[in-house]
Image (tube, rainbow, N blue to C red):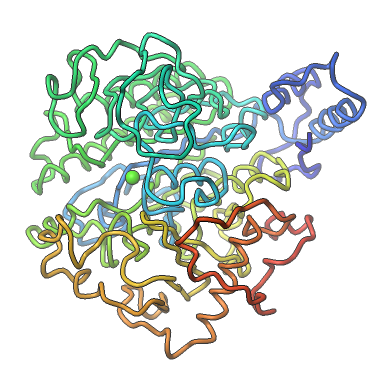
Length: 577
Ligand SMILES: [Ca+2]
């Protein structure tokens, strides 16, 4: 029980005393198994401190709402305000950027879905779990460990209503499924599963009061909506009987992929209407523009590009619906809205690039799965009236793993030492602080095959040859890569060092010119892996066995110039303002 908040209230929230009873009630959100009768002396004392700290802190009534919209495979170049050459028009995203802040150097924590989501929600890189590469399937076991704190826990513990509405893709325990089996596999077979039984360990055990959505990507079975811990309808049919696109498997009669995004948005709007009086946190992981590309009739042909473009136009439309509902409910002034993406665009961007001149990766190299920028550099727009300067831009690099510390600072929670271990608050960046407030803290990039890269300041070091993800040189998909710059760039040295300030397109490998930077960044990445964390604090357990992707690991100490990685003073855990 280390969940104590900071005493100093944040100035922009205002300060009001709330009742101890309410504090207690919400405090239990983070303490599900604690009862006062059974609590020992230590726990009671800690609980007392928890309440007292709350008396000086931020009132629930003035707490900002948060809506986090997480598009699936939406590229940097798919959003007009990020790429003026984009052939897809995104008026709602552009409108959001006009009254908010556009971050130009934001990175998903992985180049693929599942690990990116894990890191977003827990503030910890997913390669520290048993999932060293790839993603989960629709019937895989949960990836988030029991007791692992999520951003939803943070908000829930502060009295927020919390909802996950969308694509989970972090595993759950289906009745008769693979519970008890070892390993994290992309399990998409429904063999043995009883859909009439409750599902254990869905999003509702990870801090979400409500969950509605699909288990995994829209190209993975089962094709059924889940509400909390039950399917909403029995999947007695199969995809091949109902719709096209995606792996075969159980589907509910009448299932249509194109209905999914409108349904999710309807659910978000319903949640906003039901919870307009209380502070809320909505996590809305969309199924789009990931495959299968399934725009509704009203959007077919709208992009004048292709079906992907049409689907992207629909993504923008539904984001607009959420924004409009916040306006209608008069909630926009007190709501932080974030729109970002879980990784770069799918490789079907290459034929689109050559045929239509629309580049979903913008000018960056590579796509989803890659450690090159196209794999993980994502749009990130944040609107928060009164805090974020309208129409502003931030060029400081950060990673979506930083949301945990950011939200913790927003709601005045000190993260326990063993939680959010890779997360540094970007709240100062949102508030317009100039310069790199991360102070030497580096970002780790991770590809679909489990390869590593590290970014600090202008320097980026890839600890492998090639993209780290897509095999541009060979393979069954190679025809779509023919003639691309990615194919020409695929044969590299085993280390790639790029200066992203002068060479954002990763064209000139400086590994031989600057071996000292290669050594320094290799040592820093090694330190992050070995210590089980990339923030200051106590060593966390990280097993390094059977991990072939760590062939680059160095035992050299981190040079003194490398910042605060070895600082164990827990007071520096907080982002310096
Ligand atoms: Ca994705």
